[in-house]
Image (cartoon, rainbow, N blue to C red; front, side, top):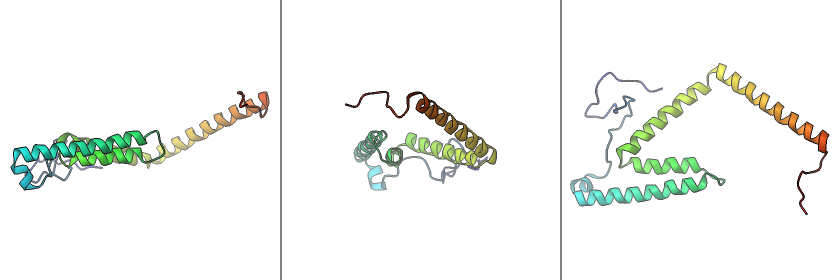
Length: 145
């Protein structure tokens, strides 16, 4: 879980605007010689955006297919986060939420509840399967001729 800082964001960027202690300062991570030239920096940002968009697009395509769709989407967000503050804030928020969800999932009461709900769901599925087999036998409800 993230530790909140009572200090305002310092020059070292130790705490982001959300106060979540993101660690790194927000903003462009482009090399200094690129940031010095406005035209070169804008070109750099366009290139980073296009590459990130291609990776996020590939991740979206992978979502319904067998593959690591969400991992690829977050990889694309990571590419965007090297240059854009909004992507950095989204990734910090996502990391915080995933950490909180992991903490909640390890709570014994939540684990017991999830096990009970899973057992109930499996019992309902088994009951429906038994009802179908008793009523119709091993015959499928559609023709495959």
